[in-house]
Amino acid sequence: MKLLEGKVAIVTGAARGIGEAIAIKFAEHGANVAFTYVSDSSAEKAAALETKLQGMGVKAKAYKSNAGDFAQCEAFVNEVLKEFGTVDICVNNAGISKDNLLLRMTPDQWNDVIQVNLNSVFYMTKQVIRPMMKAKNGVIINMSSIIGEMGNAGQTSYAASKAGIIGFTKSVAKELGSRNIRCNAIAPGFVETDMTSYLKQGDAADKYKAGIPLGRFASGEEIANTALFLASDWGNYITGQTISVCGGLNI
Image 1: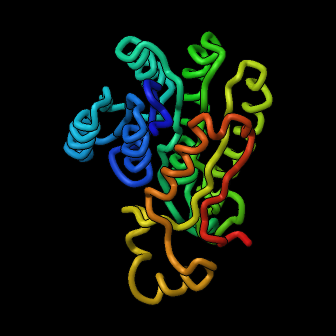
Image 2: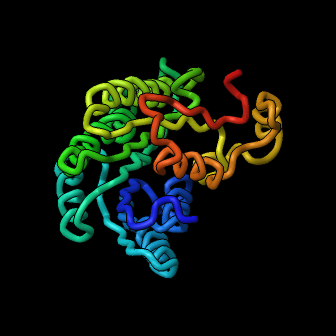
């Protein structure tokens, strides 16, 4: 059974990692997927993903667009509406980290993380709610992090951005619930992606895994499964929630 048959989904930052896994999972379940990548170095991966998704029998297109730029978000969503006709699902996944102790963190490092991780969620959500409100139906999924719930030394900017997403998600859910638009957040723990590759081996990996009751990092597909559930009719009565997918790290 395909849970998203004929739906149109946007996924930001999908050239790799969690975003890529979500795009693939959605396509497996029949969604047409428009996704973004931001750098020229990701163009080859984005093209390969576009081809892969199309080979699964859905419409798919990669767009070079910076989610941390309001004008680019507006142009991107307008292009998707022209190409795909509507937007049913938006996954705000684009994100970066520039870890540093607060004492050493520069304003530029702070602002870069807030711009990409938090402001982008506002920019994209503001654009997609117009067609969703017109259709009186829609799903918004914002990628937070377990760090936004727990905090972490050396990650004040990242934690602040991801905690801000949780508050934003709750507020959007209250504003738009009457229009049948659901908004939820996912808070992954440690996931096996390029961003966490430095944690996969040696003492550091063992230290982090020791604090996770399930004793391992998540796969991208496990995060994507949660996104699928929230995007589908199976999650129809869930809004304003943050689903922690962290192996019990926050217990």
